[in-house]
Image (cartoon, rainbow, N blue to C red):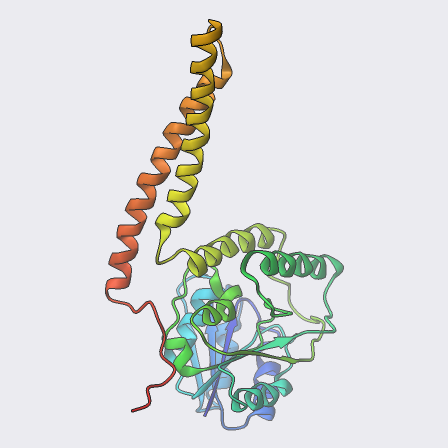
Amino acid sequence: MISVVVPAYNEEKNISELHSQIRRASKDCQIIFVDDGSTDNTFLELEKLKKKDKNLVIIKFRKNFGQTAAWRAGFDNATGDVVVTMDADLQNDPEDIPKLVKKIDEGYDVVSGWRQKRKDSLSKKSFSLLSRFLRGKMIGDEIHDSGCSLKAYRKECLADLELHGEMHRYIAELLAFKGYKIGEVKVNHRPRTKGKTKYGLIRLPKGLLDLVVVLFWQKYSDRPIHLFGGLGLLMSMIGTAIAGYLVYMKIFFGESLANRPLLLLAVLLIILGIQAIIFGLIADVLSKIYYKEKRAYNIEKIVK
């Protein structure tokens, strides 16, 4: 069985048509619409659809909590073996759902849509290219279009997923970090014809900060002392070297140190280095507490 999860925020003009298109593409799937605190008639439109469709599930948030929370709510209520996600703006094409599921059947755990011919503005395309470049450099991401909402997941993958903040952009990357097999298929992309886009310029800095979080979880979540302790040792060593140079100049050349900016820099680096090491020790203790009830590994199968 397939579950299709669709977050919707002020998409009253698109809901009915999207529902019809999903039903044509996958007649017996479970459809989950998550009304993310819409202020228009989105929920009323969903209630009309519910009267005609017994396999439609409506989740209504009290306020706008964001796409990550909406997807998490949809994942928690999905009953299908495969969970497909998509946007509610009609830019994703439901006709691509069978292609995603077919790729899952080939042995992949996650299949990401690739909007090779995007129907977006130049600014959106430019931000996506920059984001892809940063992902490749920082976390070695090889997915062509991580920002595409049209994706398919095996249900068991989602049980092993922790979502918070605005991490919906990096679900595939987080699952790849846990060892799941990631695939891609080229999908259709359509221009938005109704409603207003919810993406603005603030999306880029938010995405960059989330990328830093993903980088940390990939490389240092189980050993934060290596990151903070390494930075602390580096700063302390530089500060100590500068201090040693100043002491040498004072003893052998009698130079005054009171008015030397290097003295302040040396003291600052040594103090910051010690603080970073202490912070790393605290983070290491917290990570051990975190992993106490969680596994630091993921088993695909056990053969006995």
